[in-house]
Image (cartoon, rainbow, N blue to C red; front, side, top):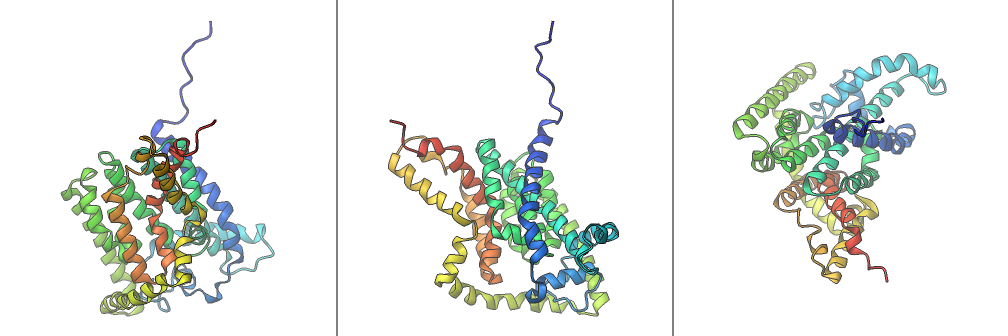
Length: 355
């Protein structure tokens, strides 16, 4: 007589919650970012040339803004070593040189951005979104041109977005999210200097995931690693520590420029295009819920609150100091993914009833 016991899942629940969205995000990004990796014109991009030089072990001609973000270039250099032996056989039409290294950046950045996407999915689930809605929202956010840009090019945006996304997940997860908050505090200082603006938000809203003493310990280790990297890089290029301070202060001059740009028609278009046409679904859902005035519809955006507003304020600071409104605005991806997942979760309440 056949047993009525259902088959045991091959993967555990925790692995399914992370591995499946990560694999789906990797597949999506690998497809979307491949043309960017192959056809991008590097002649006018100082940032990409800087990170390629860093991956080759050359720091003397790299701007102080970039030279301490060593994790992604270092990982790309490790991946490029075995890739270089096979690259010419697979793609003989491409000349030797930086092609294997560019491919290595493409692989590393796709994997890191996909991990950020898995964080968005799980954060939206803990906020109350349905699994299917959270997955669809994650894929929608990954179609942004800035995701394609960050995955296909030799940049380090992927790691910083992963750090911010891990922090958002940890805050949403609360108890049980300490591992994610610990990784955020360890990797954050080395991912980007502007992580300092994320710290107050993390320390306050991350209390439920990790107590302050443990947060302080993880942050101390991250800062010690940053100081070690500064010392090592400065010794190689013969630079003084004061250069980093002066470089940070120079970013303050970008505030006025960013405000003028955001107020211009081109700037408004850049802001609205960060997440493409999916951004229109949020005001549309708000208008529909007001029109229907149903109890279910009015709760769509209820899970969003001070946590999300605080992160959006930090993203605004990044945009003002950088001057690159769209690229920095994509750091709001965790919050936007959650909001979009709520819309997809409640879409039945928003549409007119069948007559």
